[in-house]
Length: 375
Ligand SMILES: C[S@@+](CC[C@H](N)C(=O)[O-])C[C@H]1O[C@@H](n2cnc3c(N)ncnc32)[C@H](O)[C@@H]1O
Image (cartoon, rainbow, N blue to C red; front, side, top):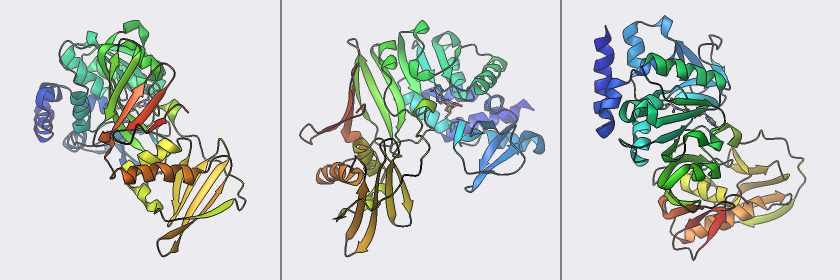
């Protein structure tokens, strides 16, 4: 009976070209980490899919797909959810698709002999892969959500692994087991927590997805220096991960709209449908959230009560309304213009530097232009 799971693991390892993580993918039983139900993404909602309603073969085939299986939406696990689609809400925990887990582990350069801190245990699957390769004693993993943390602890024990598991906010790291050779996060941060920098050894690395409130995503890989600083770059392909819970965008409040200042622009706001353009705009207006109403772009920063909207008026021109202390469109447009003039470089042309009291992103070759992330 167990042979089918082993066969599917071997197929998965081959399909995703697991390389030096092949033995771990072939050994770790993903079904143990998936629990009794997962959510299926139906685009207009999340439908719980229960193991008890499938044959074992069907369930195992689902488990070993190279897919992210969402296990919790808005704090409700798939097992507890009513047996009907949950309206579109933010997923809050998942088992990341194995090919992406392996890609991240490779980018982090994790190999035998490394001591690793993982932020975002989730189901515990990626934790188990690292335990398999490095030994449980080398792995520490932190999970914010107590229920998810308990489930991962049970699953890891069933699979025969005993890493240090911490319930709490991974943004503070876990100093008791520091220094770490590698820190890897599977939830996305807005800024790099300085505790991470101080808990990773000199020349160790931090590999983390980043996600800002404007929706710009990036994948950062930094090297730590012994003087409490870290620097690195973004990878060419960004990845979208759910936000670290304390870094999630606040709910949008309705901003009282007046007419505001009126101006015109010839910068097409639909640029923001490009991942790098959105990342660039976010550097300029990190507190703003963006939305589309048809072809009208809105930028809202409820904290400062600033608002901008940009709507087409034909002939390659757009009408801009702005109000509040920040001219959100003007600030975003300035950054976009710099990026356009530099020839629309990919995210891999940007660098990130972190010190005790500052962190900034710079664009290579733009005359030292940089944006402060803690501003
Ligand atoms: C994409 S899931 C993790 C996937 C997991 N590594 C796996 O393979 O199953 C992200 C997890 O990060 C957790 N998380 C979010 N913010 C966190 C924080 N500040 N500290 C620790 N965990 C956090 C979420 O609760 C969620 O379980």
